[in-house]
Image (tube, rainbow, N blue to C red):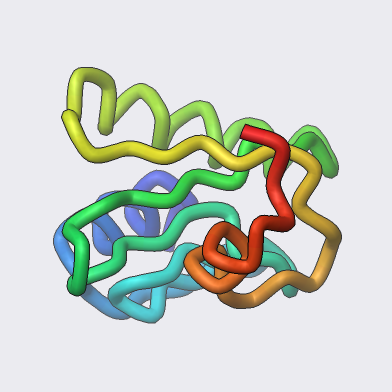
Length: 97
């Protein structure tokens, strides 16, 4: 499966995977770091805007493109590698947004 297919599956709330990208339905994980998360409680998309690699940046850019204009997007910067829960990262005040 292509990374673009995994991203589309994530946006539909489905499970999918490729070599380095995984959708759990509510999280999009690149290697071991969540790069996007949909929170069903507040209906927000949390997008990890931190740059890690070319591959992760491509996935991030595609998510951002597909969600362009969505009213409930929270962009997060300076997210450490291996962060699993972007909502908790945001709620704990660890972001600089």
